[in-house]
Image (tube, rainbow, N blue to C red; front, side, top):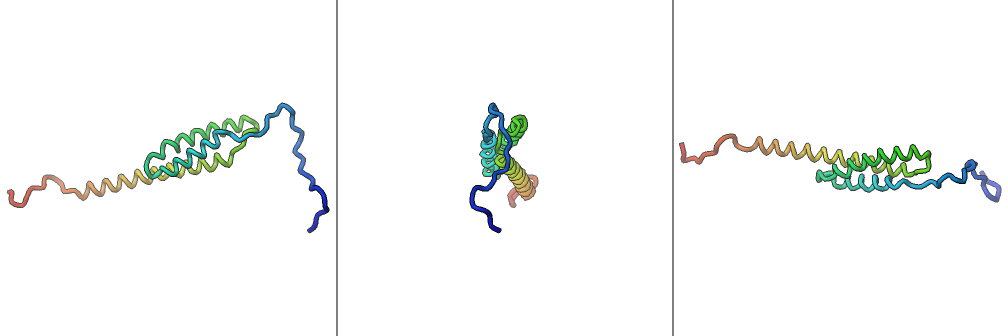
Length: 122
């Protein structure tokens, strides 16, 4: 299929009101992404629970602000990625806690019960 030379017609965007603000990326979207990444990277060390929780709270606020802005705040992809990484960090924290509990129970079960007296004592 060939096209005629010249400019391709652009889809009609509609007339913007002069007082409408320009679309801008929400600053909280980057913060959610950064905190989600930090939560995912430190999730196995139990410390990831704090940044992941803060990221999820900021994501709620950012979504609320983006909805109330009427489409002038962007950054939904950053929010989704940050939320996914925050949830991944929380899952890694849960896996670490479960593994630590299982290892602790196995070590506790392996310990001798009662006093361990020497062989030459009655």
